Length: 174
Picture 1 (cartoon, one colour):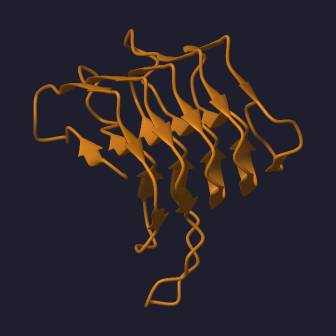
Picture 2: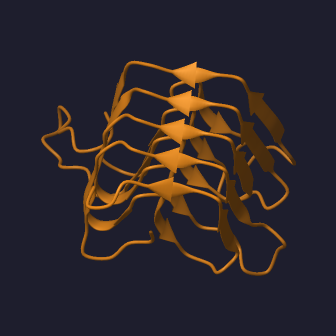
């Protein structure tokens, strides 16, 4: 991520992170061919830890996020979650944020969040409030102006918007 690579990991018991009044301007490119999570503020909030929580507020991304880069191994990246604010999240509240940078990935590209994969047996949720995306989102599958893909139904988007016709997608969550 532009500010944080990963919040928590499967070896820690809990991570509670609050990021406020921050921004990223630059470019982030994927360099690995499997399970790459990239975002303007946070790359990934650990998917396997149900007790990790993240709050991102009053933040923005103006940088370009590119998950389509071919690495030295010649691979084209398909297991990428790329988002303007966060690449992959399990349990987060994203409030008063925006993205103006372009987001590119073969799969899971979103203007605010690339992918939400919360555990259905927990109370985890993704909440996006008062946020917007005006950056171009380009993904072959599972891309959207706000969220690329949401694997569970515990997602709420309130008072948020994106510019129409910015996503190229076979499937996606707008």
